[in-house]
Amino acid sequence: MLSGPSGPAVPVSAAHILLTSKLLRMNIYVGRLNHAITELHLELLFGHFGEVERAKVITDRLTGETRGFGFVEMKDMRSANKAIDKLDGVKLEGATLVVRPAKPD
Image (cartoon, rainbow, N blue to C red):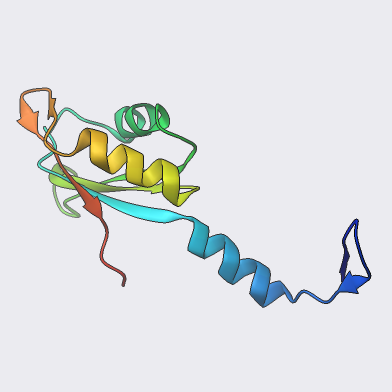
């Protein structure tokens, strides 16, 4: 239970807290990445717009080489939407980025 400053305690379940925290986050697809781009590059680039929960560049299982795309999870939707607006179509290391909300699993 949580007690608010203006009233009695309100019951809050762990499931509700987990669901709410997931709704506030956004997973972003980043495509057309130059093969030199790393997860650290993505984290730093998107970090200009807000807190990055994680960044992942997808690699080939056999060769270990990048597949040219990745995902960035940001902690709040407002920052994520701003990053999408500002970074979609931007050139990074000679490649024009495609930045979109990721499709759900």
